[in-house]
Amino acid sequence: AAALLGCLACACGAEETVPGGTAPAVFIEGVDQVMVGVENYITSLGVRRARLDADTALTYEQDGRLDLRIVTMTFFGESGDTLGVLSGQSAEYELNTGNVRVRGDVEVNLSTGERFEAPVIEYLSGVNEIRADSGYVYFLPDGTVDRGEYVVYDLTTEEKQYGPGRTTTPEVSVPQ
Image (cartoon, rainbow, N blue to C red):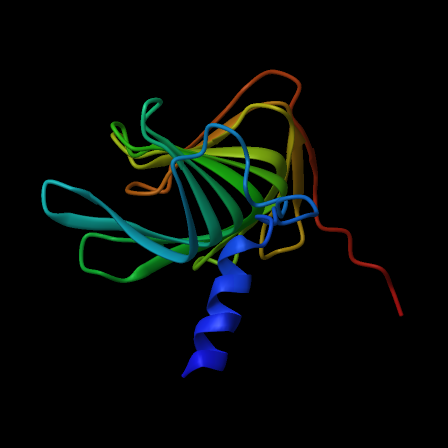
């Protein structure tokens, strides 16, 4: 017992050590919380519109937003059927509106076989539509490719609105 008390006394008298090194990159100044493996449902009047999945979420409570990494959004119709899946490298999710702005190799694969690619795509929760306003490429199942600066796709009605500068390349059959 005397030996144990001697060791404890020596330990108490030792200098306090401070951990060395730097904080991991996930700890960013101003972040209130860091969450790993996030799943969130976006609803409107009790109807599930989308499921938002992210590898990592950084919360900024004062700003009312989440910064997300490695993002996947699944969009749902009125009957619960899957309308499409969006994926991207990062996103900003506004908690009070439900809007999500996705960046980095953004791709939307629709259940109709259509596909959008854009550097940035925004999901507007209140009107249930996706919007690309920094250029897009739109691939139709028949091989037609559509390009432009601005497009809005209504997930409920499947209607599209195009901005100026739109070009369409029809499917070309190449003889064998």
